[in-house]
Image (cartoon, one colour):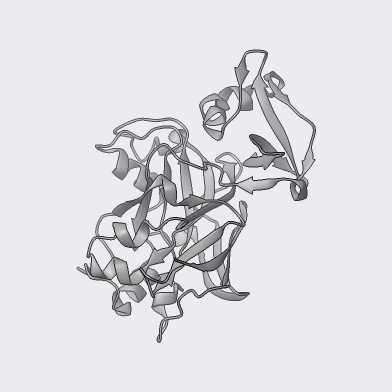
Length: 294
């Protein structure tokens, strides 16, 4: 099932996507309203197991609605993983932007976060604040959406806690990332986390075999497969939940493959007007345009 958050006639709604249309999910039975993606995540076992209880509206063509980020303002920071594809770890260490290099491929996941306010949707603008950065970069990533919370989740049980998957573009100010050693400021610019276009539920796809591609102005820059992850999705859930309680609606961005702008010599970083398009097989396409801003 593909589930989208969208705006229709100035009203934000959530619905199922199929055949070029979105069909609003309104409530379960006669009592429980479904107004946000988090409502659906909490009720998903009932929606999936007893679809007859989910009251749906009439289909609306996708061309007639505005697709928003599936979780427009997550309750908590986006959890992100660095250097999780071997070739990207190598290119990043060579780039000169890694101020914390301690060896090419990490022995354990490198985890950092992005604030909820960084999130934007398909078609939204990526701000390029020239007063802050001269080195804005793209990172195509598969993201995990948690459906069932917990702490101390084992790798073997991780799949029971995953609601679905979406696409994230982990936009990064490389110069800020290098200057401040820790990555937060370089990863935390407003609009630096395009997400979408929707969530595909975990029963629909095999997260261990998804093709991840990114184009800048129709030039293919990144092309890899999630099977190349150093630490797979189950390991990431296990690692993060070991001491931190995961909650429904939490998002884990699993890392980017080789081909980021900083990895080229000379670097090929984002500029005003660039169009970044990310496609992950089985999920869809996330497209955003870079706009220079104050």
